[in-house]
Image 1: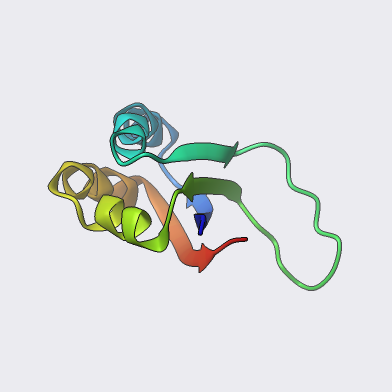
Image 2 (image 1 turned 180 degrees about the vertical axis):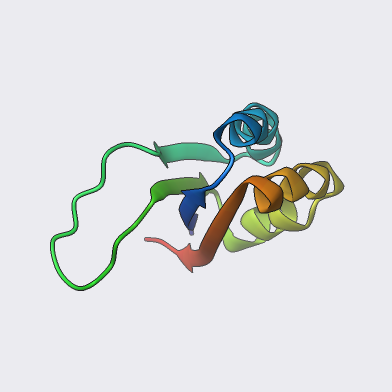
Length: 95
């Protein structure tokens, strides 16, 4: 069953975040993932949500998404995101 990592990101250092984007993409691909949404315009339809940059990653399974999340290759890149943005991420199974 497909799995999705959904992120709501508030970029606080744009230059550093650009570095993160370049380094993160190969780590996603290395774990069989792909970008479904990568920061396009977002329109709130209901509720008080005020999203920043929305990113959606698709993986073949929850296990593959977790493998990516906990991998050494992504761990070295994750720190760049932490220093350049405030992030909220969830992992959810799809259909």
